[in-house]
Length: 341
Ligand code: NAD
Ligand code: WQD
Image (cartoon, rainbow, N blue to C red; front, side, top):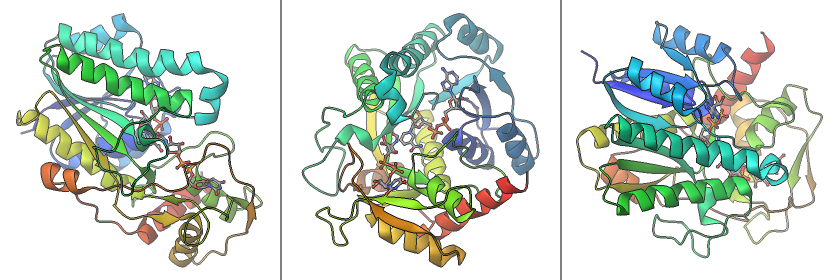
């Protein structure tokens, strides 16, 4: 007996596809809504290969109210929604801010309106540690002040959190959990789903795996003159499968009626890792020697950030089980499987 239908917007994407798999493993019935603007049908095949059946998918744009309404009409007894659908390229958002506000803010507002229309009040929202800007104190807790975002993308996450807050304050019945992800990396251990960066990756781990695979010549580490032990930036890299599982426990908390209007949770490992340490972990985990050099700082980089995950551990029952090496190994296995396609 399934635990309930969960609508997963952006379910064909990187974090969404892993979450769909974990929902099935936990006994839920996920339904994907995706417009494939940043994903491929092949991710659905990967999901099918892992879970053993074809998870239903609606090819719909979440900003399209009429189409979203049809999804809710068709899928009558949806218990909850996990909203991943958004654009996420920081650089592109600086060049095309309206595209980002329209998609990221527009899709949330449309979704919330339709959810209210259908009296569907359980939402998990994908937020980001980007809302903390450059934090004054580490690790960051959920009480750490949210700061002015340094990109339109980051601002869409801040604005979406504010929309959820305003809705909660309005007395709406909506119950929401906003998960603030730190840096998701890695792939499913089956290597059947993973991250599909389009063009030159902006993120560290896909750049590392593509360099090791010979697609990129060399990784440039963006600066080693920061105020950190080895001079390179510090991040909290969380295995995408652990992150996916955080959504499953968040959904359970919502369905149990334990959420008081709106809650925020950091989702990371609680561990800070420098760029150099990440490179070394990749080399250790895979036996690959990485060609890298130290380059200039990247504009807008946060020198160091990592999560305090006490709240997620205590209230959500969230825990990470994967090591950084395991995450790196899974990212490499995924890269190798992509080469064989
Ligand atoms: P992704 O691009 O792989 O997945 C997003 C999915 O949403 C894609 O399949 C895309 O086709 C779909 N989509 C986008 N706009 C849509 C729309 N209007 N209607 C329907 N589908 C749409 O990204 P991801 O890394 O899986 O990120 C998922 C969520 O997590 C996003 O909201 C992102 O901002 C957030 N997030 C990601 C990271 C990260 O580093 N990957 C960190 C923090 C937060
Ligand atoms: C990680 C570290 C780089 C590439 C971004 C978004 C953020 C969030 C996650 C969604 C940094 C260094 C990277 C390279 C490098 N996304 N690096 N050489 O910057 O923490 O965050 O993704 O919400 O909003 O800004 O992630 O993977 O780009 O970088 O040295 O070629 O790796 O300087 O220290 P970041 P990242």
